[in-house]
Amino acid sequence: MAITRVSDLETPSVLIDLDKMERNITSMQARCDELGIDFRPHIKTHKIPDIARRQIEAGAVGIACQKVSEAEVFVDAGFRDIQIPYNIVGERKTRRLAALAQRADITVAVDSQAVVDGIAEAVEEAGASIGMLVELVSLNNRTGTTSQAALELARHIATSENLRFAGLMIYPSDAAIRPRLQETLALLADARIDVKTVSGGGSGAIREAHLIPELTEMRVGTFLFWDWGSVNSRYTSFDNCAMRVRTTVVSANEATRVILDGGSKALHSETVDSNYGYIEEHPAAKLYKVNEEHGYVDFSDCDALPQVGDALHVVPVHTCVVTNLHNQLYGLRGDAIEEIWDVAARGMVW
Image 1: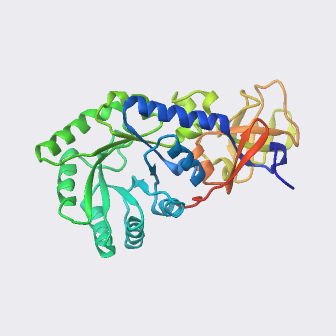
Image 2 (image 1 turned 90 degrees about the vertical axis):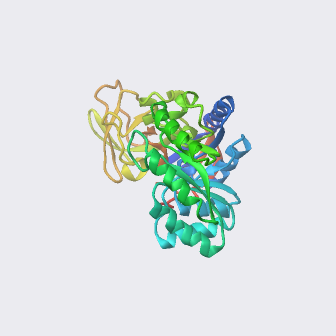
Image 3 (image 1 turned 30 degrees about the vertical axis):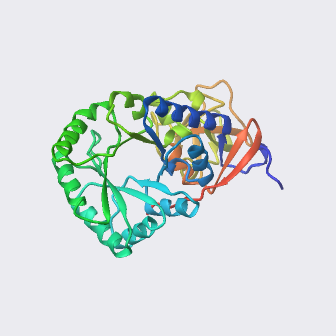
């Protein structure tokens, strides 16, 4: 049977409102243009080359991929300006990275000499060249290094003919991190080391990008679909959420509770205020528990209880992980399906 309308789909299925997605692409590109910085969308949110092409056509300078395997999919699809904002560690990964650098302009993030040297060995053996952004540790204290260590890393990168110091990276680039960034830039300037790129990131951090004039680009991903976590964090409004997971009620044997056919394998297990998603048709309902294949919904605060066979649409807490759980996404205008996308980089986490 040809799939042309939402009602043709099996559940759970992931629906994308094309009008909202396109509006999100346009508005984020416009925001970066307004700031005078490059926009580099992060494909981890969608993992689909066709959507990335739409972002490039809207004005993006290139893309960001989180892992080597993701980048391989997109290089194979014809993309040639790819940043991997991640420490690539291990001989097999660095060899694959070097092979990519023979086919495309690849830039990676690094935060230690060990990471630099591992990549340098593979790139030299392949006769390739690769750019390196030194990552500064942000206030969330994830990966990254200090200002003084960043200076030493930049100097170390410059000792290899196959490496080029591309600049600095930080995630998330909230305004509070600016003093550390300024300190690092001052150290590099004193050492006469040119900084071409200062790469910021975060769908929430874009709101504060104007407070860090040193930024030259932004890496943003979640903005494409937005999600309930973003609404809860006040990064966006519900009207901008483009992703829904269509589910079906499979059990309704209690007066105030139903069971959906969407559980952790369809929605993931992240929560906002102990809710695993926002049910569009019943805002007061609480999706309070998920097993692998079951979603438990409390309707105590609702006027009506859906029945077996009814469809409910869940705005997920985190879109990026939902994409990685499904083979396909369905692009809609109204009730009509215009696009069926294979999630080409699904499962590419190494």
